[in-house]
Length: 166
Image 1 (tube, rainbow, N blue to C red):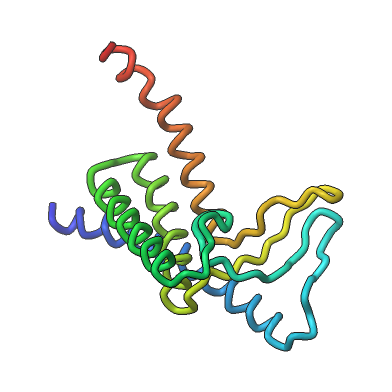
Image 2: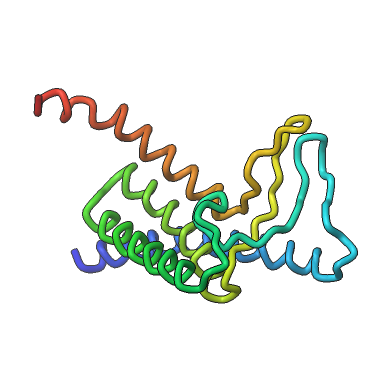
């Protein structure tokens, strides 16, 4: 029993670590690429560029302020959310658990940058003609994927449970 639980915990930890490392490697690569200062924008396709910005706010640069108190407050809020996600992972199972694990892996990647750099490097610039989406990073992709999976789980997996409670 204990060995089975240890294997599950280890497997979950490995998933989180792999997501964190994929994010770290992508950010280190981009930072090295832009380190010279000669490159500001790399055009990959007509819809995708690499453009490095530093995000001091939350998702998609929301609540970006130069005030250190606001930055620290946002960091504390994010740390609290990460703790809540860990608690939710412990209390959940199946598809929801893995959705939360994906969110946690991405969240830890961005939180690491907040602590280490005091900002999160965003660099993926998706656009159609002159409409540019928010610039994001690999951790944001994992967070978004996890949230989409959670929404999917709420709509399709818990349908029977919600109908019986009405």
